[in-house]
Image (tube, rainbow, N blue to C red; front, side):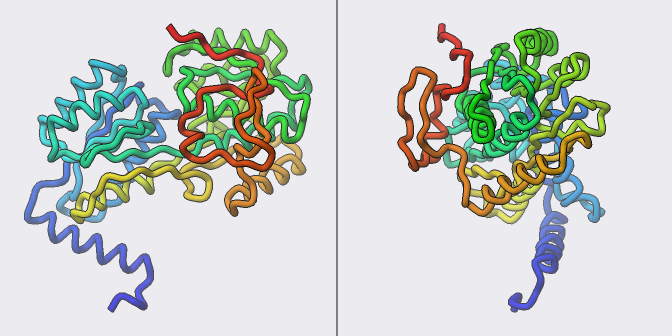
Length: 365
């Protein structure tokens, strides 16, 4: 019956069916828990775009809203997060998104107490029947940014402001380094750890330290624009992260590695409305549109843009991969021999820094 219908027609029919079903029940209550304020750019902002896409998709054309979304911002990881998540479950929210690695354990604890509630643990790796996990291959964008950074650097040294040495952050640091060294074997990377996702003052101090040590390109894995501001003041390049900041007055932006959650979030809400939600693990990247590079600076030569875009094309086509051997750690330990490619499981468990990264891993307490 639907063989000749376009995907757009099927989506419209699906939405009409959901609208009819919603008239007999209350709107689906969906909540988001955020590690920092929403602001106008960054990790939380990109996830809030997903929340807004849910509202746009399911409510704009309907007199009777299909979905009601809410969010709680600036929730610290740990006991505070568990309290907030539990309160949301108690207040009738049927689907709760918890986009921060430190929310994983609180999410799992509350999920045990509320088996009828569904949870989306973003960047977490633990699942249950009512807990789904998702993440993105941010490291693919980091690799591309590394290629661009090496092409534009004059000192062969880049700086990286990082929050915590969790696998996701280490993947980004290592991929950035590999990207740099793929076009400049002399390239090196220094890292300063700030032990916080959201601390403008610490991020600023770290960025200034890196510039003072000779870095003329900066990258970061934290939640504010402090690194971008320092790059602007010091007249060095910076790789924006999470959001494209080219329209925010940051002339220091070389390019941006951006995240896109709208499609995923809408699909998970749709599955709730249709009664087809199931726990699963999603790990998408450039190919799936969950990661991208945007906001090229006008001062970047066309030849550099073309080279990076060509690598991006090859990665999407599966002709190029990031973590392919030979790969050596800082202490010369072989983690992948010539031609070998790290498995997803190996990448997800990454706990080391590769050759070319000058700064050591922080010592565990």
